[in-house]
Image 1 (cartoon, protein in one colour):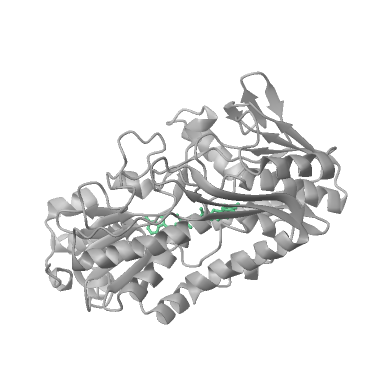
Image 2 (tube, rainbow, N blue to C red; image 1 turned 180 degrees about the vertical axis):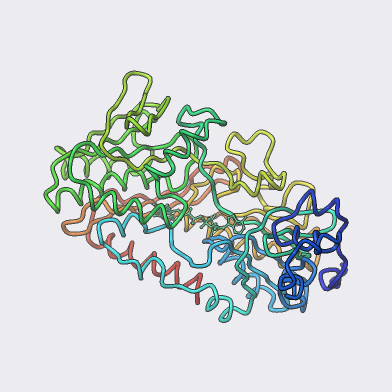
Length: 456
Ligand SMILES: Cc1cc2nc3c(=O)[nH]c(=O)nc-3n(C[C@H](O)[C@H](O)[C@H](O)COP(=O)(O)OP(=O)(O)OC[C@H]3O[C@@H](n4cnc5c(N)ncnc54)[C@H](O)[C@@H]3O)c2cc1C
């Protein structure tokens, strides 16, 4: 395999390529190359262009370059473990956020079980320095797989292997909202964020919960395979627990399309019945057919529900970049990546891999799953750098998911499971539905353990 392609500094792609794939930075470079610089100010002309001609300003590759797209649970783990598997790999992690803030455990921040330091006091720079890879803060916008070239808003970069771990995006059509009804979708995003993707959503959700003055607070369970199956049920518990603790009068209405709670059902039912009988109203078999975010009305098949405040979780799809790159599995209703389920490469392409919540396999889209899976994918990629046909024995990811159901004192339940290699369904399931203080302590230690694994 040629390892010097990514080192070529000034092989500017054609204008046609720029127009088709570019980002702002490369478009600016293209404009200069096409002689449009005359319209720019003298200062702009004199300034050296970031990335020198549209290339991402990162050091030259010192070995086979593996570019990892997305520094979440999967990407951070993958970057670290690629270096562990083979220190000679030149690993480059590209992440669009400038500061990490954890999705998992964020339900615990809403009622002050943990503070922001617990969720976010971690540095991409420290992780990269400690584990010996390169981190660059940019947004990936496209790929040319024939040329092994990646496009970002800060310039292009060549790769030898590419691992894409971008997580999820929301899918509002699961609320019965037409795909092109941006008015409604954006009103929901802005007024009633779910808090399952972006840090800024989490801040808004916390302000809603802690500022709730009474009435009906709606929490929704999506259809399909959504991120963190127990988390909407946990969300109902933490909102109710917060109301109970602070004496706010009102109810939490949990709207679920499923006929019953789909995971840790016994533990959640006991919490609803024993701790929050007068607060949580659980509505199973209720599929949402529409939302009016202005009048605060949710339409189900049977009725219109008026609410005072809400965190609305519409359902998920593979992250948008997977679609932009044309990597969607044709029969995936959630637009997830078209990967070999055992080796994680895009079907027919041994150089491009997808891991984490954008995978199509029906695993729980959760942090422990993403981390254990990424450790395995690191082994696959490291061995394929040596031999692109390498087939290493499949390892099941491990899903370990805690849920805080009581806040006085903190008590949690959990599920711990592996996956069947043929059906990809749960196997070896251990579930503890008896809420306990010990499980709550284990929950906090588990979260800390994942952050330590990703950042040190
Ligand atoms: C409320 C809540 C509770 C949860 N509870 C649990 C739990 O108890 N247990 C558990 O195991 N899991 C839990 N999770 C789920 C867990 O956080 C996710 O499943 C896990 O983080 C998925 O990892 P990922 O790497 O696939 O995606 P992410 O961690 O979301 O990482 C994706 C990264 O890619 C970046 N990215 C996306 N597109 C681009 C691009 N074009 N260019 C550059 N970067 C890009 C994003 O900015 C992001 O940093 C919970 C999640 C939430 C929201």
